[in-house]
Length: 317
Image 1 (cartoon, one colour):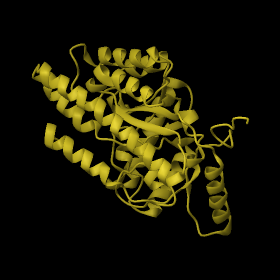
Image 2 (image 1 turned 90 degrees about the horizontal axis):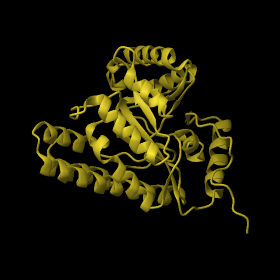
Image 3 (image 1 turned 180 degrees about the vertical axis):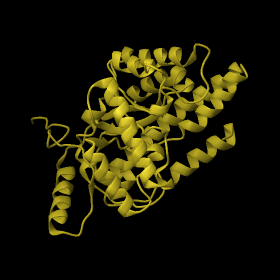
Image 4 (image 1 turned 45 degrees about the vertical axis):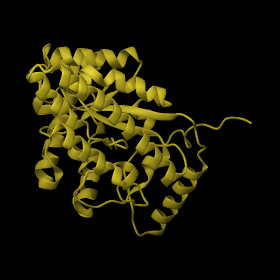
C-alpha cells in the first residue's frame, strides 16, 4: 500500500483564520475538518523548535550571553536542527551580534516585539512595538515579514482586538508562530539562574535533570491532546527561551525527544499541517496552546496547572 504524505495539501499556507457566521466560513471549516480526518496517523511526530527572547533572557552564564548563544547554536547544529529564534528588538546590542550569529548558523529569526509588551495592556502601543521591531529586523535580514510570536502567547482579550491585530500582522506579511507544546520552562530557568549566581552546582544539576523530565512530560502530554482532539499526530511547535538553562541542557532535552519518536522539522514545515489553518476559537486574556485554541475550542487539561504548581513548590517561582 503506498504511503500517503504527512500533510495534505502540501502547499497549505499557515495563516490565521477566524470563525465567522457566513456560509463561506462554515464550508471552509467543514472542509478543513475533513482534511484533518483524512491525514493518516504517523508513528513519528514532527516537531519545530522555537526559542523566544533572543538575544538573551535572564542570568548570563560565565561565558556571557555570547558564549551561551554559541553553545546553544552548536547544540542545534550538531543535531541538524533549524530552529527559529524570536527577537525582542530592544534587547539587541549595537550591531546585533547575537542575532547575526543566529543567522550565520543557518537559523531563522522572527519578531517577538520591541519590548515584550503584553497585548492585554493595550493594543496601539503593542502594534507600534511590533512595527518597530519589524523595521529593525528588516534592516538586518534585508526582508520584511516572516514569523511573529505573541509575547506571553496573548493574542487579544476581545474578539475585536484579536482580529484587528491579526489583520495588522498580516499587513506586515507576518504569520503567527503558534505554540502547541507550552510548558513551565521559565520557572526552571529562573531557579537555574539563581543557582548559577550562587555557584551551586548540585542544585544546578538537580534543576537541569528536572527540566529534561518536565519537557518530556510536556511533549507527551500535548501529543496525547492532539491525538484525542484530532484523531492523529499533528506537527508540534515547542517553545523555550534563550537562556542559561538551554545553553547547558537543551541537548539532553532534544535527545530525549528523539528517543520518543519526535522528528525535528523547521517551523515553516510544521506550520503546513492543516491543524494550523483551523479557526482560532479562543477569546480571552490567557496564553494557551494552539491545540486548545484551535476550533473546536477545548479547555486546558489539568496537567498544565498541576505541572506548573509542582515545579513552583519544588524550586520556587
